[in-house]
Length: 151
Image (tube, rainbow, N blue to C red; front, side):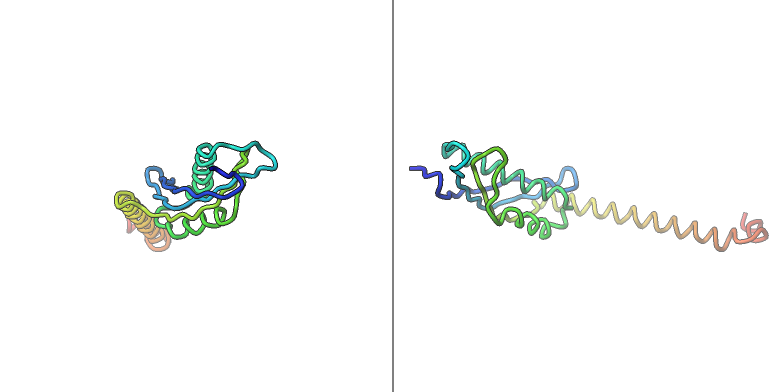
């Protein structure tokens, strides 16, 4: 028999977005839920479990979408903070808490690595262009005679 005041446990598994589109964390863990019977009517067990999983997803998603894929550990720690203690879900009698482990699939890790490589190459190109412009300003175009010789 479902006792709404007593906490229950549910398994959680989902893909949570990162700050890079197309790459997501894989989250696995446990969520615990109970109902606050003082302000809301009692929900059936299935509805309470569904509200729990949806609520945990929304809380975790709001955190993980601020992190890049290579910051998996930091994202996991940041997700742990709001889910460590009982949280009331908005407009619901359900209170939740959870522990989640975040990871990247091999495919997403490869995508993230390719993106990081592209970013490093672009930064290198920018640095080389800056160095070239600095050389032109400070050496080749420093005075009129040098500029004429250089051209």
